[in-house]
Length: 230
Image (cartoon, rainbow, N blue to C red; front, side, top):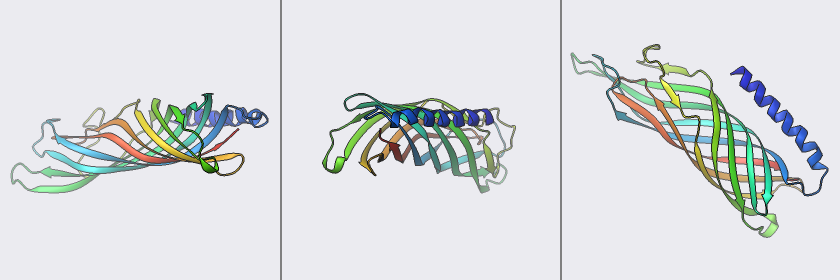
């Protein structure tokens, strides 16, 4: 994970160096920006015979709350059209209730699963900006994907799961699909702020229970972005 963090730091440094000459050129098509993005995902659990056990465990539905942020470059290649690429750092927290059933007595014990991990992501997107309105505000729509993702080792806080009982207890897809819209307005002559709610397909799976499978399919959130408008 450390090597990826160093790579991310180099990317942000290169972005800064690229922006220096762009500032000196009027109406440069290349902008540099950063964002902070609160995220929420819904965990669904369904019955599945994962592993034999005389004390089977099953998960309930739950929520995953996370936060992401990063830097990016945005390039306007045609009137109204731009491409965006960057590097994001995110921290995911997943929580859901789990139950264990004792076969001999039928007694049910309740516990919790908390799984958290950090990741480095490389998102790219294609954006269309509508015409400017009053006060230089405008709307936008876009579609994007995650080119790649590197996940850190998950940290588990579980009631019944035994580490080592599953080869890969957490599976996170490296690629995603995101659809978003937004509204942007100038903060000053040099900076523009945008608010971009989105929904993303982010297939993930947790295999901690013996008689159920817990999945995340969709993620929603809102990106608050500020960019240097060259």
